[in-house]
Each structure stands twice: as C-alpha cells, then as structure tokens.
Image (cartoon, rainbow, N blue to C red; front, side):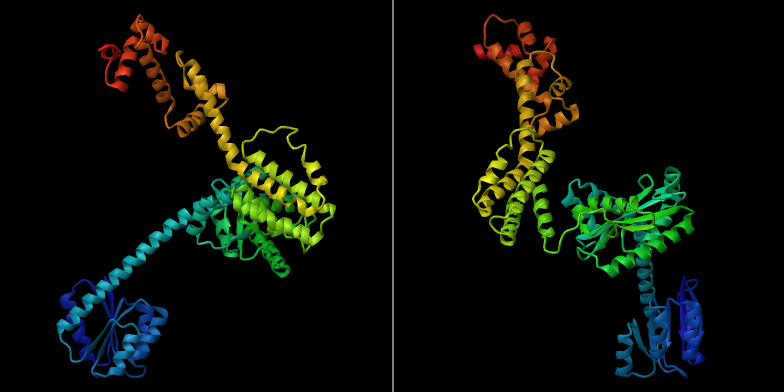
Length: 532
C-alpha cells in the first residue's frame, strides 16, 4: 500500500488525479487531498505520504515552499510536480529539491500513471534499503559486543597482537593508538575499598549486562568488555598519550554520576577505576593501574594519577623512547630495536656526559631487563653464571660512549633470541625425537611414547613434528621402517618373518600391505626384482 497525497487548488484536477490513480492502481493506494500550501503541509505531518503530486501555484504558500517545509520532517517523500507554467526557474528549483518528475498541465492518464509507477518503484527501493539497513543494524547489535570483547581480550592478553588488533580496529572503526582502561567492579555494597557479595553481584550484572553496556556507551565513546567475575574492563580511546588535568577531573566527575545511574538502574553498587593513558600494547598495565587505584582508595571513582601508586618520571626523561625500545624488543624487530637502543644510548651520553655512573647503571639495568624478556619469551635455558662478564665490561670502559657498541649488540642479541631461540629449542626437540625414533623404530613405537620422552603433550608434539619435518609421526616412522626393510630384503638368509620383526611389525600380512602401499609391490616381489 502506498500513501499518495494530491495537492492542487483546483477541485477538478484533484478529482481527475484520484480517478486516474484508482482506475489504474485499485487497492494499491491510499489517497488524501489538499488545496492550499498550508493544508498540504499540515496534511503531510499527519498523513506521512510516500508520494506527493504537488501543484506549483496554490493559494498562500506555493508548491516549492511547501515541498521545502515537508522535506524538513519527512525527507523520504517522492515528489511529482504539476504546473501550468512551463518556466525554467520553477523546473530548476524543483530539480534542486530532488523532485522526481516535473509534469506540465494539461496532462493525460499515461503521464500520471507512468510517473506514479516510477515513484512506486523508488518507494519500494527505499523501503527495501531501510529494511536491509535495519537487519544489518540488528545483526550488528548482536555481533558488536562480541567484537568489542574480542578487542578487549586482544589488547589485554596480546595473542597475535598486531594482526588481531588491526582487524578489530577496522571492524570497530577505531583509529586511536592510545587509550586508558577502566575497571568497573560490582557488589551489593561497598565496605572500605572492597565490594560485598562480589559473586552474586557479578551474576546479577551479567543479567543486566545489556543495560549496563548501553549506559556506558551513552556516557563515553568506549569499547566494553564482558563481565569477568565481578569486573567489566572498558577501553576508552584517546588521541594523545597524556590526559590533561581538566580532562582528568571531568572524567572523574562523569564517572561518579555514571556509578550513581548504574546503581539506580540495576540496584547494584559500582566502582570505577581509571588507569593512565597508554599505547594499545600497554593496555594490561593501564587495567592493572585501574584496579590498583580502586584498591588504594575508598571512593566510587579512583584515577591512578591521583594516587601514589605508580612510577612517575621527570619531564626530561624520554619515556616514549624507552617504550619504543622495549616494544620493538618484544616484537622481535631487530633493526628497529637496534635503532631505538642507539637513540636511547645517545640521549644518556648527551644528557649526562662520559663519566656519569648513573649512565653505566642504566646500561646494566636495561641489558639485564632485555635478557629477562628474552628468557621469558624466547624459550631459553637460564644459566646462572653466563652473564658474569657484564659488570667487568661496563666498569672497565674508559668512558661511557665506549659502551655504545656493547649496549646495541646486547639488545640486538636479546631481540634475535626472542624468536630464534624458540625456533632453535623446537628444532632441538624434533632432532631429539628423530634420534629416539631411529633407535627404537623396530619396536612397537607410539606417538604417546615419544611425546613422553620429550615431556610434551602428544597434540603439541604431533603439530611441531609435522611443521619441522613435513611428515606426520606415522608417515615418518613408516618411511624409516620401509627403508630398513629394503636393506634387509637385499640380504640373503633372512626370512620375511624375521625382516618383519626387525622393522617393528608383528603381523607379516600387515607389513606386506604397508610395503605395497608405499612401493607398489609386495616385499617378496621387491626381493625377486632385486635378484633379477
């Protein structure tokens, strides 16, 4: 059904239009009429037409002005202009307003019906688009919380960090590289810095999650995670790395009002901790700061910058450069890590000179921390005495700048170890497995047995073995056994049963089937072929 409005000051024109439409489109159109500009504007507000036939010259407000007014409240109306005046100015104004068609009077039924058919198709297209848009919106309302929770998980726990975070940012339309984490904790009530009945309140918060999430999104342009125990992690994007004083105070005030609204809405007590602005890779540190802020205060909202619970740096210290250095180290980007190490070292010597002992202390501190990161993430084996030359090297240098090469080399080495030592360790495991298989393939050897020898789960060992050798465990053992069987078949005096036993098979028939599957002939045929 289409709602059609007919606007013309002549009754005969309105009646003619109605007759033409009802004749050619019976049961398809609901028709209302108006004869003045004011009438048509008021009718449009109550009738909400899909299509409007508009005369240009009407008493009072003319058709062009009426169209402008109607479009303010209902921009989707399809207008067909009727006019006895073939004037360019009117036609141009109508086109500028997005009018679908301009028809000169007098007109015939074919002109009207053809124009109305085109208008109906346009209305159908707009309705379909509106329906499709609503379906997409409905789906996004379901999917977006899942995507947002995935983003929160990715920035906090950093599994496949770069690839995952870039994908989530694109899906969510995020452009910020910085932000602060909020920690919302819930309970029946607050006692000191603790929440009572955290478990029960967490369950009730989960039941009210949709309402809590909506209010958070209304308050801040933020990304909301799921309920974890009695906590909700929230990421607030920031365009700059530092939040100024006024912004921080405003955020605290907004947070306090939010906590009150949440209490009234859910009958659950909320506290909000706010961490410092960090890069996305440092989001977990910001979240931990938010939790520390709550633990070290009794207010409904606590900001980490208000409390003496974090390390502060003087204005001259290049904190961004330090973060850049260790970010590149953790990601295994050797060239970038070496450049950052050089910039940081040059800052130290330029700022504090050649003989400042604090420079040498910082050199030792950073190199040891770089080693620590490599040990934790590179699968390395720690040896207590392997760094016993560090202090002699640092203290034996004549001046601080003499240590630049050593400092860069240690960071380069640690950065390389982040990936190479892990690969080396995996290679050693596979080599050890291959040696054990070589020694024992003549026995009833299983994947579980070899995995146990390496102290690995069968699933992980199977995956690692396939990645390193290109063959799965069964294929590898079978190839070894077939190769050994071929050697034994070339020897005289060994029965088929003996050969079968020596290569790890207890059933000669099974051995024969495996042999033929791999070589296209039975063991007996292979032996005879060798003799021939």
